[in-house]
Amino acid sequence: MVRIAIVVGSTRPGRNSEAVAGWVHEQASRRGDAQFELVDIATFDLPILDEPVPPSMGQYSKEHTKRWAAKIAEFDGYVFVTPEYNHGPSGALKNALDYLYGEWNNKAAGFVSYGSAGGTRAVEQLRLIAAELQMATVRSQVALSLFTDFENFSTFRPTANHDAAMNTMFEQLVSWSTAMKTVREQSQIAAAYQS
Picture 1: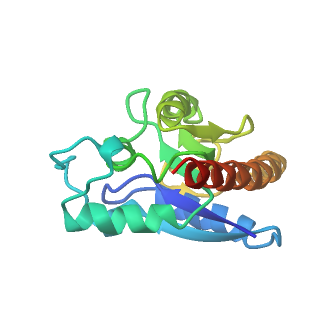
Picture 2: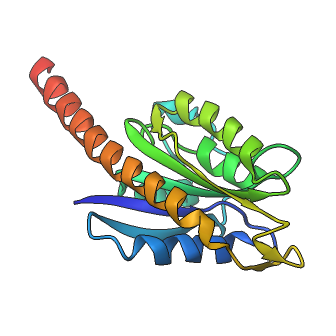
């Protein structure tokens, strides 16, 4: 069974992403086709990228990077819960993605976003970043509006019309995570054969 992380993509005080990620996790917990775990980037205390060697080299020197890498390596896929700040994802989420490389490769990603325009512009940028990190992103996403899914722009009250999009995103993500796990296994077999 594949393992999927629900990544809380904001670290700012009073963030909405904790409530949104909790809702995503609650929805995911009703499924029996994958194991889901909340992963909060705030708990890893990642400073602005401070590794001296590019992440693609896989030579992590800082303890916070090693902890983050070990956690991310556990999963076959990810749901990134992202706010939209200035037409993009949070700096904290971008930074967390930039810390690693190989741990993201050949895995699947889905998105749950929120903002005045549903967070869709943040997801557009995240799709480009994910492609560079060799992640396969699923088409379906959940876009939450600050106007209709949050009371006073702060208390999360999702409308029921998101359930179908959430289910479709999960269906695609579990399917792709399973397929990408096979890709990683075949790559390992090929690498072992060549050595």
